[in-house]
Image (cartoon, rainbow, N blue to C red):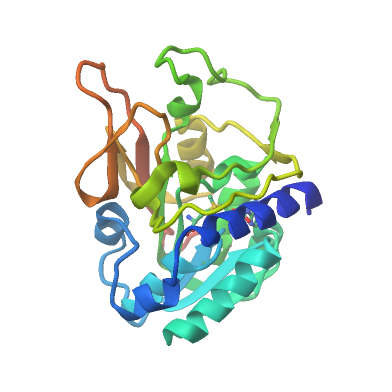
Amino acid sequence: MDEPTRDSWNVATRNHNAHKGDQAQRLRDGVEILHQEEIALLGDIAGKDLVHLQCNAGQDTLCLARRGARCLGVDFSDEAIAFAKKLSEDAGIPARFELAEVVGWLHATEERFDVVFTSYGTTGWLRDLDAWARGVARVLRPGGVFVYVEFHPLVWSIGDDLRLSRDDYFQESPFTDPVGDYVAESGSGLGVVAVGETVANPHVATSWQHGFAEVLQSLIGAGLALDHVAEYPHSNGCRLLPSLVLGEDRRYHWPDGVARVPLMFSVRAKKPAAGPG
Ligand SMILES: C[S@@+](CC[C@H](N)C(=O)[O-])C[C@H]1O[C@@H](n2cnc3c(N)ncnc32)[C@H](O)[C@@H]1O
């Protein structure tokens, strides 16, 4: 367990939720937090056992539960898991939440699932993608489905000046920064109703660059069969660069006159009926 990274996520989670108003009420009102991409890729999840990896404060998990799945959310931030449990209770949407380091959990749990889901800012916090992918394959039942929607790793190379002035796409050594308040920076895209004070984050978090091919290769190497891969010219919810423009459906788009590169990707893979694990 990387404690500074966990502590950094605890502070960030507190900051993020401070901007989102009464989230239980919004859920009770039926507000949908999931995006079209994951809804379409997941399909009908009613009655299925679903685990949401790195679920943070559980908002997406509860929207998945509202679609009829029996949901478990896993995350290593105690702040996030405590918030998620309370949100589940206050919103009246049952789901289970477990505090755990995700890769260790994937290799230790005895539970098995029909669906494994993860999205929007997850594998960058994990060093060993092959171990992660093998764990995903391990907890899937034969015939089970893995769905992953993520910000495209190209984005981290693009500076605020829209030049390739930021991180090397092929960097292997880790990045060390506190988790920022990207929720405040994303406004209504990430459900901000009022930007109050953001508490300074004193904890340095460690993250890694994983290229698109590396993600796909890790899943192939774990014996999963990819049946869908896509790249998108927009970013759901998160204002990844200051010049992106908020459009319909909480999507941030490239401004006019810019040659677009992908801002997100998605992958769906199945565990073969006689697969590993
Ligand atoms: C960007 S958030 C994911 C948000 C998520 N898409 C949601 O539904 O809100 C990343 C999450 O990964 C968690 N995390 C980072 N490293 C982890 C690890 N090694 N094990 C478990 N959770 C981890 C953080 O606590 C944080 O909640």
